Length: 194
Image (tube, rainbow, N blue to C red; front, top):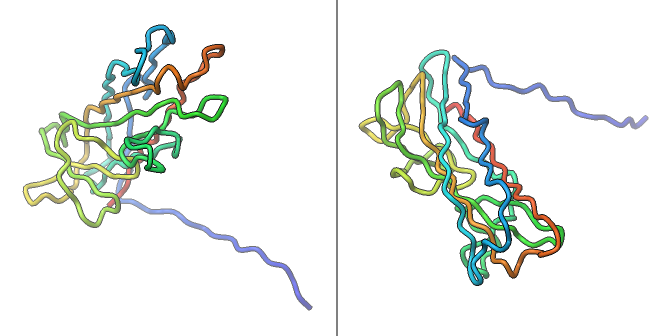
């Protein structure tokens, strides 16, 4: 006799300590209402850069990094029209007609680990790390963390960095004139245990 079945999985990670991330301003960059009349006749509308403070507090020293995820993938205007998507840009959503509204880029600067100034490294996988200079673009899907003298992650209890948010909107000609367009960028910053 044949029977149907379904699998059940129980998963999780037991860590030596837990870390909690927070962003100043509840993680919101609000550009308010922007009049279409304020857009340049040609080209993109660059909005004022915003800075948020990222803080990660852990119960005890732990190897960790912070990973950025674009919650609006595929909606950023690429650098080159022939690219299907730009690897360094986060999306702002679409107009009601399905047009891309623009993009924003994240960067980090002034990082500290346990209240000491540190340099940052980044990696897409956590296997190989490269230097991430201050104010360099933080790509979606990449992790960033502090490094020691050997350019490797090290255990820390507290991590902080300024996160720059640079927003650019599409040209006036690509936006509907008769309706409001909502800027809808969203990203998640996750603590990843290494």
